[in-house]
Image 1 (cartoon, one colour):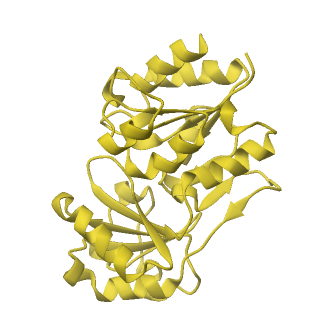
Image 2 (cartoon, rainbow, N blue to C red):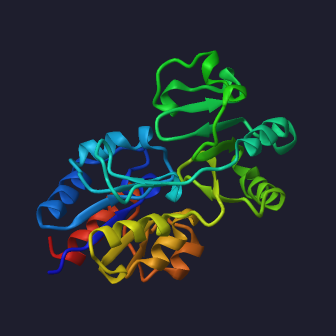
Length: 267
């Protein structure tokens, strides 16, 4: 079989409901790599919050972070690396409207660092980082970040997303992270996972028809539509299922992604 790019979202897709990589998922994906396929993580998460899975899967492939804002080969020099940025002024404006919008926090991120509007909103476990200090306050942001991250209540997520898009429509797109928390990722206009995936496919001299992509949320729409074979998770949104080529029989809690992949590739 011709090598495939296997593009995998993390939350709600590759990871289980505890946001962990199950032993079976790891085993099947490692087997896919050994069979000559290219397993590629494509996530809304920043690099520091996805690197542990990249390492656990022993990957050397390019990866997509920030919903397409960063495409890179971790710890490697790669000629095709691509990084986008968003105006820091939007971060300051969201911080000023925090209460009005119903936001729990506003954070600005790039490949290695983060800034948050209020240290009382800092969760060391959530941000996969050490203790934050005054230097991490959003007011200290001096350069344009790769993306902005805001958290709100689940019941407000859709309306907050629409309000942000209405206000900054010419500059940003708003994506979801997936998972149990209402995390919204604000990225530069026109940036999405499919854009990053196209860079990876070109670098490997493979066609989009050679891509099988898995996802569960709205931020996976372009990726599944772009891929030669787009697969929505059983636990995915109805919108995603409506554009997917197929839907897994099992959810992310049941290793649904690798169950499908194993059969599809004959691993």
